[in-house]
Each structure stands twice: as C-alpha cells, then as structure tokens.
Image (cartoon, rainbow, N blue to C red; front, side, top):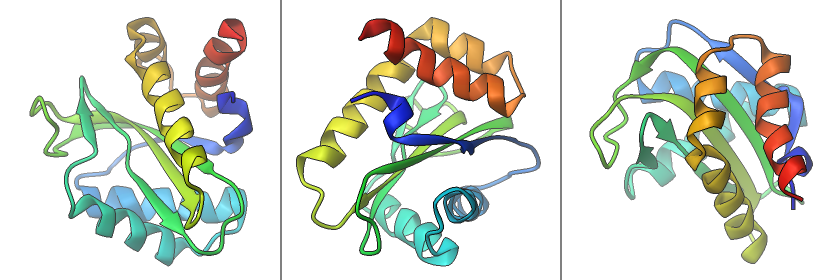
Length: 153
C-alpha cells in the first residue's frame, strides 16, 4: 500500500485561520467532500465523534484524526498543513500543524489499520515533516507525502 493509493492530489491543502479542532474537522470534511464526494457534514461529525474517545494528536505537531463512514468502499485520506499550530490535546501537549485525516468504510477491518500505520510511519520521518512545514503549495505537499512511500517500495 502506498499513500498515493489513499490520497488524491486534490485532497491536500495549506490552510490558514484555523483556531480550533471543530473548525479543522469542518475543513477536513469539506476537503473530503470536494475530493471524493462524501458528505461533508457527516465526515466532520464522524471525526469529532471519534476524537471524543481520545485525542488523535500523536505528538511532534502531528495529528491523525480518523473515522469510519458508511458511504465509503475504500480508505481515503485528506491532508492539511496549518499556517499556525492549534491545540489538539496531543500526547506531548505540543500544538498541531500537520494533519492527515483518514476515512474508512465501516467494515474496512485491516485496511484501515494498514493505512493508519502507513501514514504514521510516513509522518514519523523528520525530513518529511520538515519538507511539509517549509512548503505551502498543495502540489508540493502532495509530492512530499507520496514520494517517500514510492522511494521505499
């Protein structure tokens, strides 16, 4: 599995003016709607509901919010780089500026976990995160996200 099979180039953005998780989830839902045709409101609500179980802020300025949606047949991803980090109740208490959202079918089973592990491995790479943080162009952000998994294959 490669990130390019999970995320569409149109599902990557540099976003400014986000001050809280609720607004971030709305943006992720809108992005999923634009890129994949899912229902924006349901996607945002699913992320918010999942977040009540525990923060998906994994540390080092990274969050991996994820949720299951009945309308999906495949795992899909959205990515945003925030211009200013926001509080995410992360495990290390650092604010978040790199957010990779995953949406999976309700019955996705192991595919959801594989996708989450792939995204996690990719964003644990400090050079990838440095490149993402130094760019605001969506096409460049997509290239950075997908080039590492292509090279590792």
